[in-house]
Length: 309
Length: 257
Image (cartoon, rainbow over all chains, first blue to last red):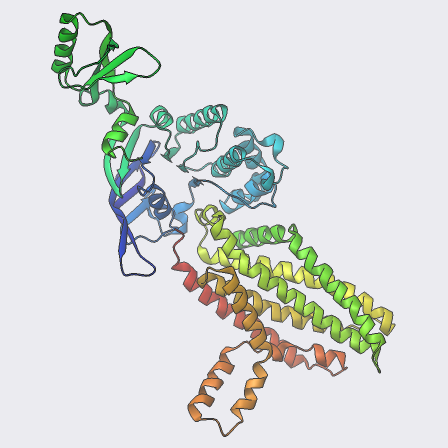
């Protein structure tokens, strides 16, 4: 663990026994990870990969089978380790009969905000998610998107040093998504460490400094977002006008572009791409475009988890 | 201490805003009113009948509330996952359990105070004087609730089905109220020694709610000695403390998957 580490996972393993048989199910298979202070870290994986289980282990909601977790250098079992955490759960649900203000005040108190500071902290947090005008509404009257906003407010209310967000963009409309992205960018600017799990890879790519991709309980890769522009992740795209029966070019299969009269060829090797371009020009095919493109996170994700999403 | 109180306050707030509490209070008041009818067709002291029936209703409905809310208390937190947001903060699990316990006991106590006040005023119609002894009867019901609430928390920490939690808690109440009957078996020489020993252990383990229950004595004007009230208080809080400690040990090992 480095001195500036916000979250350290060391060889995390979690398995459980089936209720009726002696069969063991291994959910986490030795996750090792380190998130630095002030870093925005994307935690990706297919459904059932073990992301939420990992988060629950970090929050001590699930007891580890083996391994260790530290939060700002404190062993995660100690309640004080969770003193600086703001957590937004997946599909948040709150107490129906409380008003928004009462609910967020309760979480502010529980997070250790001084009594006299609670009203101000609650107003600020609600203002940041655009819910101050509705502070008196009861929780049961809220839609999923508004519930998500309240969930974000309760996560932010105590100005945490580490934000753990499980699917924060779920249930939000495009405006809400944009507002949340801006809000997280503000937090990032302030130096808050953000650990975010999401299926909306475009947002992760926009926000995060580094991402990890998890599949079947294992960490497949951890890489900086900037590395997607590296040589190892570059590829070449050739677009041709669609023919009757498009054929393979330099080993690349043709991919039809829907709604457009185009065929796309993708090459990871520059030589293959150039050879395909020469072939196309020589056979007087109509070349629409050719160029080097950066691999997207989505493509990397699909490649690493074997298309299982 | 603050976090326990915050959780208790939230539990209380949630309870007093739900319709279940008011429905139960309404039923209890209806039952108390019915006692006046029984009183009018009874030979003897009408006030005694009203008091007897009224105190029975108060105890029954408060206990029923605790069984009902206790069986759903942790179940709802777990099924709706609201517990995640609390335990993900710097709150030890025992504080959460204790907060829930205090909140439930607070709600049941407020219910008892409101119904008790209404009942005392109702008794005034028959007795023409305020019966201060009724306060002692209410206190004995409160002591019972101290134990029943702890039993509900204890069963919630090991059982996940609300129905079972409710049945077990109700079982504790009924068995506790009938604990004295086991003594008849202990005195029975015809029973085999191991069986008598088993009954003795069972008798020791059960909460002696029958000893706490002083309503009958109050209705019939028998003085309740101070020692009984004092030791009853110590016993009720001690018993509840042990149940909560066991609940904590079990809850501490639980995974919230």
